[in-house]
Length: 121
Image (tube, rainbow, N blue to C red; front, top):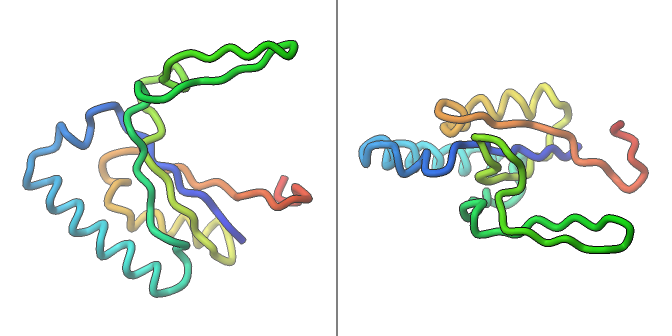
């Protein structure tokens, strides 16, 4: 089953880390990605997202689109990146995410990816 792991952080949180901490985290992230890519449980790499202020939010109400500048939601933490896992259970996906160095600094949400039939609900 596929799970998406979504990393949430305050804007500028990565940049707020010391250079030493950033370098250590990136080195650990490389090891994390290699370990779980090699096991076949991490599909592709991870994807970091540009700052929410660079995006647009689209809402269509009664057929009328309203497009506004980001951020997507009013919250301190914003979606900073994501990656896809393929594991036998939510418990295994959660176990893998506990090894993600980002989880030591920010929140990482794990959620099932629905198939076309929506059987995960």
